Length: 124
Image (cartoon, rainbow, N blue to C red; front, side, top):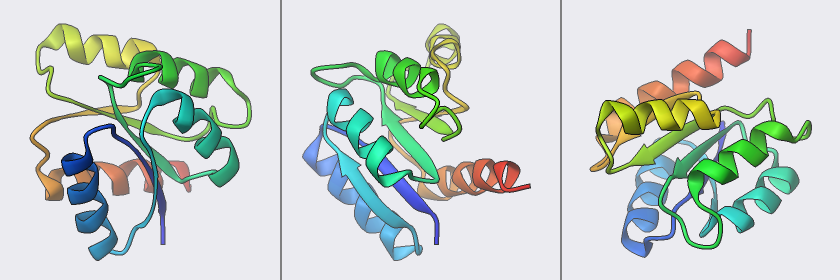
């Protein structure tokens, strides 16, 4: 069972994604802001991070940069989750170190496919 760190400040979005991904067999851990996510990622060592980019305290772009700059967490793939759907937004996510990108509202089957692809690619 893959451990997923969901970084999401919106209660409704967080609860919905936790419920739907746990139902599909993922072990879920959560953080509500970027600063919290850094500690949870170090302590929990998730298989993947789902990163909301518009976060309080420390935004998703800076949080991802810090995760990727830390040797304890650099190996963990990050999927950006954002309502910003322009090509510039996607490029900004990749420039911050995200391994993939998905737009809100979340299509759960598409997101699960991306999660499984990244986890499988890294387990080789």
